[in-house]
Amino acid sequence: MNDERVVEELRRSVADVRMTRPLDRIEQRGRQRRRHRGLLGAVGGGGAVAVIAGLALALPAATPAPEVSTAGGPSGGASLTPVAFEVKRQADQTVELILHDEVTDPQALRAALASADVPAQVEIGKRCTPVGAELPGAEKVYRAEVAAPGYEFAFVITPKAMPAGSELIFSIFRPNPAAKGHKMDAALVARGAAMTCVPMPSQK
Image (cartoon, rainbow, N blue to C red; front, side, top):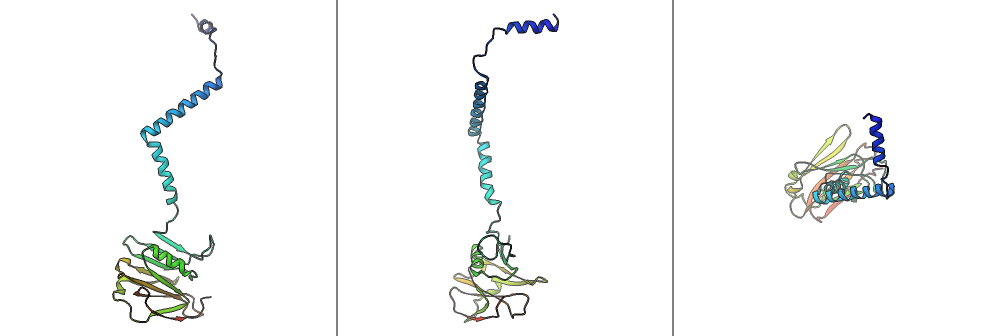
């Protein structure tokens, strides 16, 4: 039997077969079954559900987080103004405070330090010193560094070395109107200690 006769015999054998259900309903039924099997597999194995949950939790983490590095500038939304400061928690549990530009929002800097476990007060445009002496052990709590040629101040702070009930007082000011950079002083004092503050030349 040649190929043509084989084809003819097959055509005759199925000539009386009729499709009683429309094609679109058959396709719809197939899609429903595939969807049902997919849901059962996800619930039974947990794999697909776990992957989706992991992505949902990971997306917010892609945004830089303040607990590691908090950068600050003028408050009030997005701005092209250069970042004024950075507060970075280091691997050795110290905290690095870097001034890039003049700080105009002392509360923003104070909040950034607090988020890094550094209780502090920030004074702008004035130089503040404690009425009495600094608390003992200040040299173990902070040290100052200056990065030339950008004249950027960096303070390295060790929060765990701070005595209970203490805080740091930061004074940020321009030494004189002609100065290119800003000066930052720090003092370790008891929380709420009396301070003597002297206004310094305007930072503008």
